[in-house]
Image 1 (cartoon, rainbow, N blue to C red):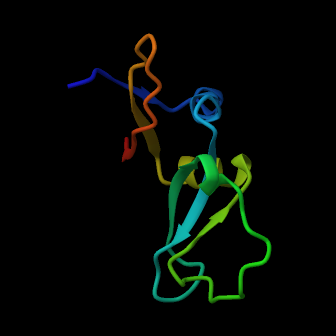
Image 2 (image 1 turned 180 degrees about the vertical axis):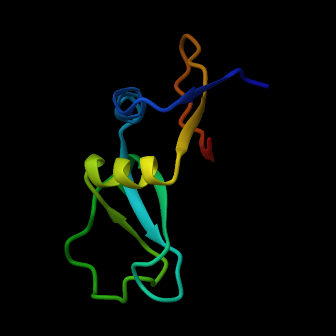
Length: 101
């Protein structure tokens, strides 16, 4: 099992995601749109939002790409940390968990 690192510093979280072509997203998991957001980070092609998608209710299960400032407001408000595998030479792992401190 890989050794993990816990990140709470905004710059460290942003740098970790950027090194893996990751972008911050919010997923609305509530029965009523906009009331229970879940944070996530998406990688590679999922980081590019298609502007031609059909309109859908906010809580339709998709994700919304957001700016890091908005993502970190929720990150801090919920007292979260990002747990990642320690980097190893020649290997870039994008596995992570968001945990409550």
